[in-house]
Each structure stands twice: as structure tokens, then as C-alpha cells.
Amino acid sequence: MKPDHITILVRSLAKSMPYYDALLPLLGYDKQKDHIWHDGDGFYLQFSQAKSDTADYARYAPGMNHLGFGAPDADFVRMVRETMAAKGFAVPDIQDLGGATALFMKDPDGIRFEITHYPPGMAVVD
Image (cartoon, rainbow, N blue to C red):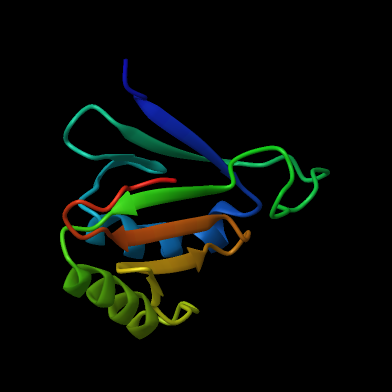
């Protein structure tokens, strides 16, 4: 079986959705309706409002650590960085992970996203 969706709770839909509205089309997702995106191959990302009394995201706390997307090439990783920066979002420098080209970004709640190109023959996860 493969996963069919991930639900991400955000502190503020009003603050977070502009980030996702900018990022997800770059990654090949189509907006199905407010707060729901589809990859065209049976996988959905759904966003909902978190309860106001919950703790902020912590790096090694229980929950999703990060969501990784495989890029077709290193130029794609650079394009995502440039486009998100041009839209006013904070984006760090691209990293070289022993040959892989990686971009690690955070949404307005600190939820981490990884966009990485792995050269042929390199393991995607270790």
C-alpha cells in the first residue's frame, strides 16, 4: 500500500495557505478545493486549523519531522528556492548532501519541507 494523504494542522490558515499556494504548484500539485491539494496520482495534502491551545512544532517532538519531495534535477531545486524567495518567503541556502542537492524550508508554523535531487544511484533515504 502507498499513503493516500497527509493532513497538516497549521496555527493559522490565513497565514499558512499563501505559503502552500506558492509552493505546491511548483511541486506538481493541483488545488482541488480550499486547503486540499492533489498530485494527480492518488495522493492528497490536506490543511486544517490547529486548536489554539496546542504547542508549536518542535524539531524532535512527536509528529511529522519533515515532508520530503524528490526533484527531477538540481535546477528544479534552485527554481523552487528562487520562486519562493521572489514571493517573499524566507528560504535558506541550498545544501550539498554528499552529491544530493537539497533545500530545507519551513512554513509559517515551522513545519519543515525538503526538496532534494538525488543523483542516479544515490539512496533517497538513509
